[in-house]
Length: 320
Image 1 (cartoon, rainbow, N blue to C red):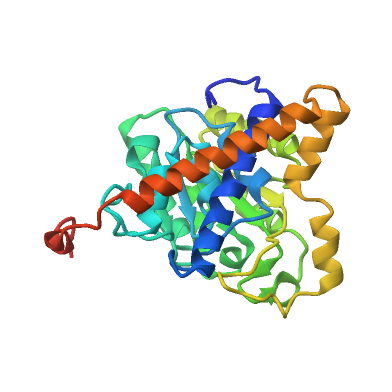
Image 2: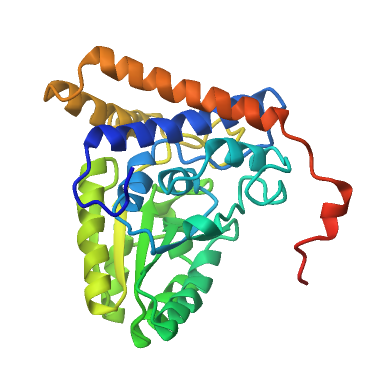
């Protein structure tokens, strides 16, 4: 998928979402089998990540969080190397040292994946200031959740970005759950986007389960950041359909709420829209899913066959 293109086929976006889903389901299955460490998945949020990343340019930078699969894969990361990283193998992007929660892929502009809630918010201002001072053209996109938005660093980051006029596209993937706590228990407002106004930052909320809506909103928001050099906050209204961390039985989740959101699964919505419009015959939809599954199976085989890091690697790439 060409991230520089303004026009993109929804089938390509659907394939990206299917890849993310299959990748994370492979991690879940591996965790259940005791072969892969537990992980924080983004199942149910695929449209939010894929839609935004598809709107970015090649020279844009990304800082993300512990639910980063969609951002990494949509940016073009190799699923084999990602799975190798998750499994602690030497062929992973970070030589098997990061696990699933800290993967960075510098060659793709993914500067940071932080498991510290709000960690990316504390660093994005420095990255964007560097871009501005060095005269680089790319904007900086920062992904975070509604939980991070309830921390002080969110407000500090937005305030500084506004005062310094930094080219940051803030993307809040509001998935309704902050670990095991519903957002209604921590927020008096419905939308995180509303908190941008006091800092003089333009903002918007989009249906995060509609990949086309997300892409279009992200294209407009990113273009505004490029044109003005100022930050923008885009909130994707979505839902995390699996638990906070694998394994998690989600006993704390209201079954009615969960069922309502599952009925709006972003992959099912996109697939049905394509089928109903005649752009994706059912047999091609089946073939598409089969191709994605085969891709992930090959990626998993590559990761499993990869060697563990040599003992000497424990002391390399350590700076403090």
